[in-house]
Amino acid sequence: MNDRRCEEKLRLLFKYRNATNLYSNRVALMADIAAGLLPKGEFALLSKIASQAHDECVEARDKFYKHIAEHGC
Image 1 (cartoon, rainbow, N blue to C red):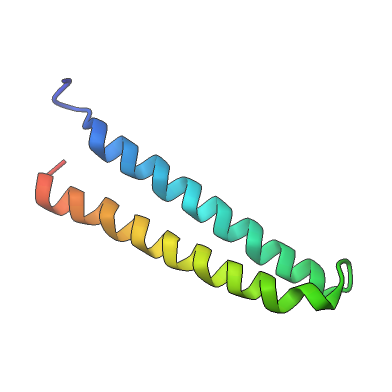
Image 2 (cartoon, rainbow, N blue to C red):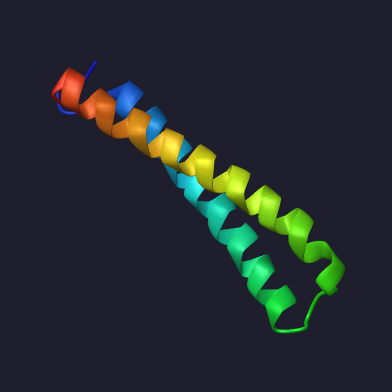
């Protein structure tokens, strides 16, 4: 392994990036509903899905920063 490159850090970073992208997409869909571009009946379900995506994003972020703190990379 290259001393300047931690594979686990990169893996966690990509997981964090993917989680933030998913969360952002869900929030954008909620904005489309609020703007009247999608049916309002889907808002409650999408809100729940966005909340779950938020939780996954926070978990991925926490794992990423925990690894950095523990591994020193």
